[in-house]
Length: 109
Image 1 (cartoon, helix red, strand yellow):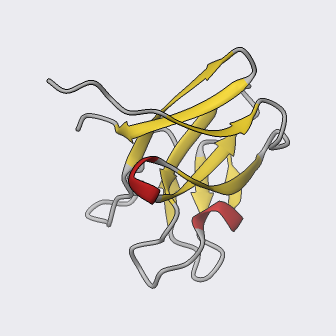
Image 2 (cartoon, rainbow, N blue to C red):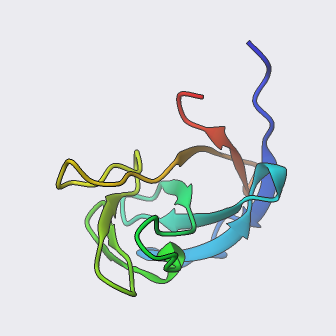
């Protein structure tokens, strides 16, 4: 299995708790990076599969983010739509090392 490529996307503390930000992940992919109130960072695809809304600008409700355009919801931990059969988002590996946030390729890929 090939080694997962990680890209430096931000510094710890750049994103306030409970908010998201668009960053550029591996392969120049736009990614929505969230700093959850549990202190962890989670990353999912930036583009909503419904009509292309900017997921990073959505509102967090626990682990769910609501797309700001039409309210479709996704779990930021795994990208799953909580109301199957829905459209899921890709979720990405995230690690924090020495105050730097790194985003890798898709979970389970």
